[in-house]
Image (cartoon, rainbow, N blue to C red; front, top):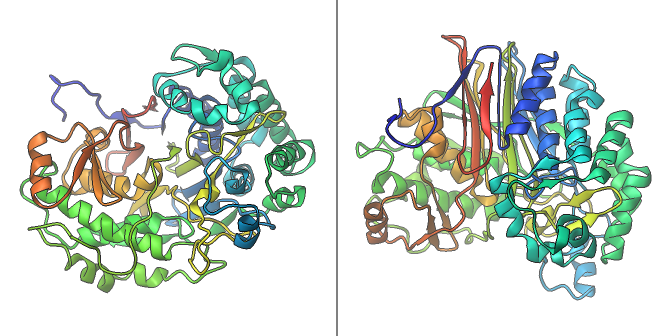
Length: 534
């Protein structure tokens, strides 16, 4: 139990259903869908759609989604890859002929075809209970009638003014009066409401074909993009169910979506950490954090070298999940000092943090959903298809122009993806859908949260509240919650540490206590959201 003298919040408990999202309105929408007879997957889509309206810097229907779904009583995990592909005309040669020497995050050339809407429809049609029109109704209401901007959303919005100012339509609609909305302001996007209503009435086809698709394509072509209406029509069938990848860690089965997602990076970190004895010094010790940093540096090194679209390149998944490989990597980590240089292959290529939403829902029957939806960077590419109200992602910034690299851009190729929903099972039953958003930080966030909860025994809220750090570009970004004395010890081990202005990510989690018949939820204070159960 947390110290009640100190600021913070306690875990949330429920028995009939629970949701944890990054905005209170989304959490409430999920519970309303559960109480209306929907299951966890229906509720997750409803919450996500609301977030696509009221947390527009982080997510939107112009982005992608990944999902892990555990139907109660089956012992199975259903994995959905809802990431989109590059346009058919996107080749490194063509982009270089247009004068590009490197990819630009606010260019139309990093806009991949959105995968989220098609993924929602496919998930709902196969595993849902309620019609999509009913599920999208809360989001439509917020878009058409407006919503109140929350604190974290306002701060992120203010940080995106420069980007949004680059595109006239985005500046016109998303910067009222020439500035970002402030906390407490009301904001609406009726054009987005109309698009969501069309999706509810006619399905994903309304988004990928016809006037809505034509609006997105026209916007991208006007900005110099290579997209066609055929690319968008093909996007309708892009999302697909895939076989999840898994790792047994300390008797628990950890599940992730396979590449092109980077969930394998989290499993690599956990595979290395699982071979250490738990440090007696505790979770907030230099030894624990040092090991975590070093394991992450090795895992991200491999991510950058190998993780890509498996339909176009060979990704050595079996090797990266092998216990022998994890043991050999773990043996490289010394408690006495940090790596001066990483062994081959390659070095890390991490850019600044990106924006995403993660949410999780469990229903009365025990169905568990782990769901993540993203535009990549804040407001994605910053390009708004004004007539449709759709902000377009810049997920293609995960590509490279380096020919021969696994992530070199190519026609109809998916980029290396950072968004990763997580699921924990024990003895064939789901016990925790969870996730930690935050772009490249996500595998590090997953591994910190899992070890906080399952190894060090923090409660679910404490495990999310716990201060974070992240190795990036040869340095370690440290949140202010890590004591100066610990930072000094890390420096003495050879880590160059920098205090970070914006905190690392934001997570949600629900623990299913099968013995007590209770759901236990937590929600990250780094976001505006909450967990609620009933």
